[in-house]
Length: 320
Image (cartoon, rainbow, N blue to C red; front, side, top):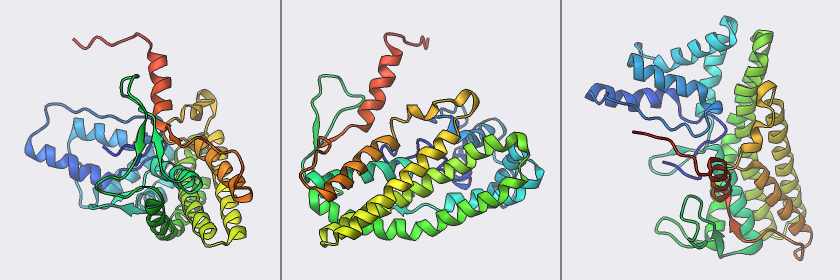
């Protein structure tokens, strides 16, 4: 489980890892049942299909089976002409993110936005920040985001993180730009009646990661510049971050065709619109430290489960 660090709006787990990890269970004979939590299904239809194919058919044959999976998916969804170049796009897509931790795990779209908001709030307000419980009982009070065994808090965390993200996201950005260029080049090969799905499934997915990576880089750089007294550079970096967030919102709107109208309104966990709000506050703060800014509250998961639980009401599923 990678809460606050995973993917909510895009594919994240490479097919070769799915084949490798689930292959261990298959080889061990642990095949009685499979339970898969996709969170949001629409963004991850390809890898969901891979998992279900494994559950029903077992491991595919071939030394480079992941490349063949990408090719088959692309051929089925986007036509034979696009299959081979799209297999390369998918391979490059899963190799593009920055990685962190031991073992190294790729950045998911939720990480970009969770961390961007926390960086901006920490710079403007410092410690303490407060976290509103999400799935906890309603009487549980807000908790203070403090030091943990694996990381410091407040400005010490801020200093370490902006240095890390300037390096990590700075190195990843050319990879994301290259994936975007490749995906645009393949689009003319896709049949006209599949291009809406292509734009929603490929181009929007890439845009979310590409511009989210850029946003985290630019906000990290803006804070570093501001703390070094380079306020004009900090304002320019923040403006670039806001443009990247606008690019994401435009890509999402373009993907809301047909029955998907207003689909991204339900983005409560990655929270692109929340990031926009916080970065706009940071932009105002850089111009006027006495400006109004958000409360020192991290509430992403709270909003998600507030909506989910109110939608569910008193309904429950009979599992017996």
